Image (cartoon, rainbow, N blue to C red):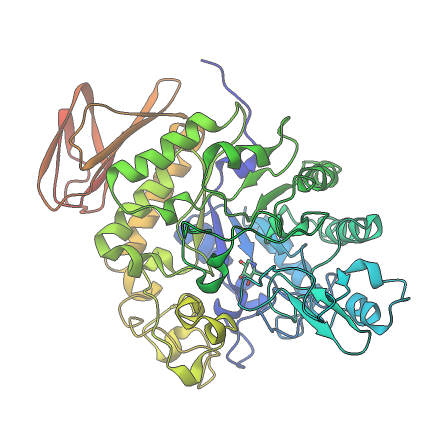
Length: 535
Ligand code: NOJ
């Protein structure tokens, strides 16, 4: 069997940190970079992940909590400074962790000096760095494009008598990537961080970088098809054909990849885009695998949690990806309801097994290793701007402080009030308590991560589904050379028996734990909801 060479980002488990909520070391109720440095040992040793992705920490008015960047080449004082960032990179590398940072290419803050200049006058040298357009004859916006966060995507500027485009908040004006000077400046901003030794980027909202050059109206969404894996409210009234994802974006991705390849070893880009057709998604790796290192794959967030649906996503992607393209799987992040709330306790344990044993790079969201629930946020504590326009879309509940201990404020901060309330499950769902409970979520993740670290089959091996199995089961095999790993997940509430003739082995990890270490010989008996990994 051929042994392909794998890049680090194809074998590593990436852990996403929302820095506001990870660990506060200054006592202001907001997490900071120093807090991440303090917990590197937790990440690399106690938990056992291989890479961290840090959500935005750039100077920002925080209209969208850092996804509105006012300086791409600095650290917001709330989170630390560049010297602390450099220390974070160095310490992470010493601990054997790669470091990926979030980069927001499609829009800046309206307080970014470029936009302040651009807004000054129609003649300003930076006017064309953003998308400014005249109103229609009746004074209305130039087309029907909508903002993801609600309302028109066009904001009227009284001072210069034109509209500007914002695909998200009006405080997040879209950059004009058709202007070569914008592209050059943004690529330089990426080099700034690459020169500081970051290992790659998570690129935010990449499809919004390039739109239809003719800026045609979007057609109505007559059959109500959902655009993403969740409903976006009034935004679903249109088919988003023209306001995002223009094919010219592929050229820009190649340009970005060329910058990443200027470095040795080459750096990576994980692109955030929401495409649910595996064939379409595959295109973003590039015809010659020269675009995004990995497009994020939100497929498992969209489907009902059943054996057939999950297998459908996995097999569909496996069939669609060209040789050399490496899958990614997402089950939680700072935009989506917490995993354990979405899937329940059993589902969230099954998800841990699936996420960490499929062929592909998992991104794991902070706190999901504890099974943290979506927190209930009282109206007066709401922070997310989206919760003001589409309340059911509010993302505060998945952004609450990391739960380190059963102490007040879950050991996250010494402040009386963290920026968001601590989830009410913190007395049980915290690192300290779960470390001493062998049945805990955290210890399940730790066992899975240790197994994965020591298994070439799990890190880089091939994937094949196992048939026939009961319809409520998803069973697959991973193998590399002589090493074989069998994964079986029972989605039903009944005991089930799975026959895998000729397969012998030992249950290395089970969501129910008690069976770990026992042998299997041709048949696997699964308890209700149980997921097992057999080596
Ligand atoms: C996607 C990010 O994940 C989300 O948090 C943000 O609000 C939007 N992009 C806009 O940057």
